[in-house]
Length: 375
Image (cartoon, rainbow, N blue to C red):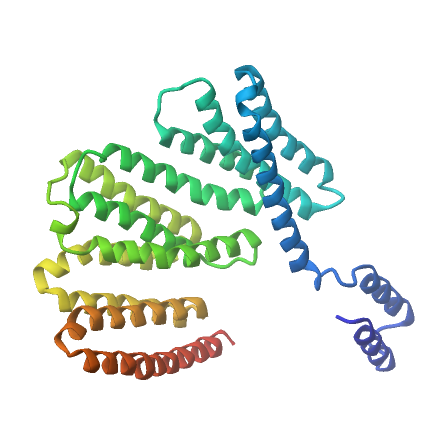
């Protein structure tokens, strides 16, 4: 709030007898002491983000430039020192500049990953790269438990699934099976949905997790759509029963557990989404390719309806995006190749113009309905 706005409101309240002169003076002193803190928040975070990136990149470049000249013992000491330096500095400035402390702790946790991989290189450890991700995820989780800071939470939410994904890749690297790809695509898609649909509790950690899910969902759904293609495109070898059971249990079970932690008893829609994913891979072979697009349209409609029910406009937008992508995919695969060049371009233009207008109109109506429900 600007200074003149504060003075105007104070005069109005004082004139109406709502506050006395002493209260008005305390309010004025508080606003003057905190003037501009909210308006400068995003530039400060932007500067801190760029500063942290430049600092980390500069340190890595400095170390790599002299890496061959450093003995193994010195290399290991340097790696440990870099990890400790950022965290110690963050702890030192936490009282004076909390945002700077959060940034430094985040850089320190990122540096931990580089340190783990460099330590493996220094001592020529046996190569099993998912183990490094496991240690990095454990370190991020430990830092999150101590610091209760959102960068560590986001890193844990990214690194723990990355470790499981890496273990699956290593376990199935010699197999050419459609189930391998489908399991690998299903887990991230369901986990992104669990993040994206977490219940908001007003804390920055939960907001960051929801945004992470929103960023990851388009990529995860694209991978899921590709995994639902013909099995001969991605391998026809059968997956061993043990691997299949373990893979599907983790791919479905972990997102359901996460959804239960984030939504409690209201996590059942994520269970329905898991069922939708499992059925997706049989729709094309059992009912035909056309009905596969209908199945995706049902998912888009369900996502939008979920957003209306819980007054979440980002879910409505995601549902509209999924529906639009489904219509375009259907046109390119089922309609466009059956028309001439000019007719296909005209049809594509109509799909973009008329379809885009209709989807946007419905989306706006749903957003307004959700906002009305929230009010």
